[in-house]
Length: 308
Image (cartoon, rainbow, N blue to C red; front, side, top):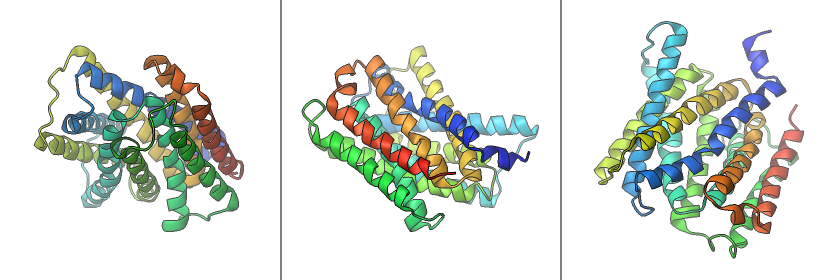
């Protein structure tokens, strides 16, 4: 069986996507833990960006080293690889995570998890309507509508969560998901031209450097850097290195909608981990959150049901 055929099999996509989302599901909880260990205040945007930059710079180094070891040779990026990696990092590492880190600091873990699930629908909409990479169907549209409904519900049920819609919290998280949708489509395109593993590594490294320099120029510092904090940073780098590399490989061999629909596992894992680790049990299991999660899950099921 050819590698491309193997990576297009539904059960393979499901297993690898589940691993990715399980890792991503732990990111919000880990980031918040990192903020606490390094005493990064919710209002200290610059230090949050430095934190993100160091994470992705390290992730890029890990991915590139893995590729070099696997190929048993040093593979330096050519002009085309640098061009594609730089373009991709502006949407994914820089665009997505600049807003993501700020948003997570100003929103609860549960609410962050549910809004993050919206990125899957945005990716499908962009792939179908803007980039014309695949055809928009009634099932895909219905799934997107249900996903948006989930986000609306979680904001309207504000009595038991943090009330309303806040630009620095939910607003930044939504902007992060728009950037995520854009990056998902770009990965699908660019990974057909270059190695998805190396592309992932170099875009992480370039984007991480940009974020670190941006945060530092804004006055950001990580003053309380302990062994525990270093462990958090290394874990987050591993999450990015493993999850995004696997996701890029899947997108290189499958339509965007076939991969993106499995993203529902991400908010589910995030909600459970937020409840267990951050002590947000009341938010995780109240009626508003459960209704929103139901909308998100049913929406992705509807899209997935039409995927062969």
